[in-house]
Image (cartoon, rainbow, N blue to C red; front, side, top):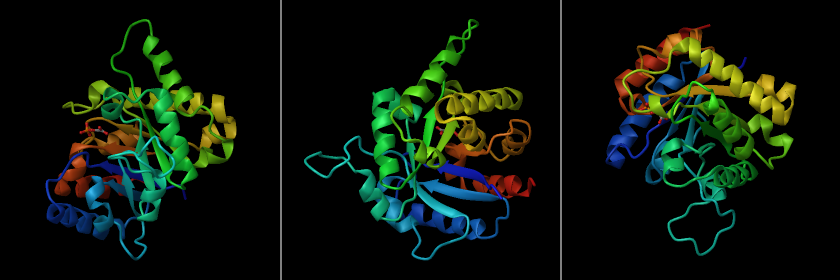
Length: 254
Ligand code: PGA
């Protein structure tokens, strides 16, 4: 069965390793019991090795929030490349998050990071999202371009390792998510744009996630009505009681 993906992007939280370990332990415990979903936590880099478990835990994975644009090791102060990440047991990576795009990551940079991540064996979550909506529908062009240019130059053999996360920028950090009915339309749009590049078969298989103001109260409607294959969650992923409620509720959806 194709399980739903619940991805927690911890961003620059929590403040200490002790707190990070506490959250990870609780998420591991609940993940083992899941039937219909898988959980990926993406803590800050210094906490990754402490969150990765030595033994394989059912339905539990660790990812990182970004990766270097540089593929090879070398004189790149502050950078961490995809192979290093793979070597410490992380399996997923988020590329092109809007907070990174806001710091200067263009589609070209996102595409380079993605190629490095895929070559290193990481499953890659490519974030797309419009800043604002306009009546003329230009934002749809922006989204199509984000998909096209971010996954440009990628071999078809990697299509199965790419996940699209649709996150309208105006909903990130907001009080309310996008309406689930609209999420459904956007998920179809993303699948179509993906299939235009990688073919219908891959377009039908690609997982599309929604992100932006998801919490334990709205997650079920987003999955049921929005018909997305999972969720990318910011704030609620470090609010452990809320995140656990969310995981349990989503897992109950058959
Ligand atoms: P949020 O963030 O859930 O706090 O809105 C989502 C994201 O940035 O991925």
